[in-house]
Image: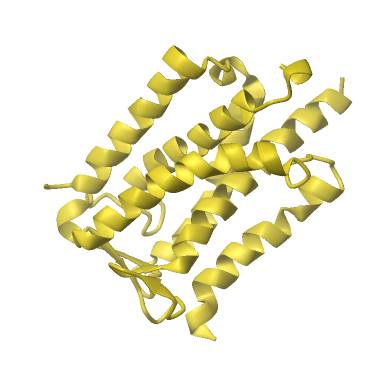
Length: 104
Length: 105
């Protein structure tokens, strides 16, 4: 499949959004603390992922046929931010769902 | 020491976020059952994706910077730690943000 990484990242992000809005309904997208936390997570993702994906000495090596080719900032594939959104949001939604009953 | 680069990076993320738990009081590490319920499904889903993508040569892991503990088809065990460390850091961030915003009234 051409450009599998951006495609599946988008599918994952949409699936997680759908999971929250339709099934889990924790309300995180209405919680400004969630959005603030996401900004912080992305801010830290940049140096960490930047280090991991730097093409001079990458820890993870991407097949050019399966990434968008857009890398920013530094050598981070832009679709990686979509992937991260999906992974982190799913974790947070599940964390919220598992909250003790009195805290909800 | 280069072989431990990926592992060291993940360990650093967990160490550097410890103050969120200990100083700010996020109570993420101290809620192990809740944490497990948040971590396990993404680990399974994103882990399976990772194995499939690695097998399909969509990406690979540089042998120079990961340990030799590899799961077929070439996923370093550190990658599984990635799916533990990154979500924990994100949850610590979320809970710390909430606590700090509550304190400020």
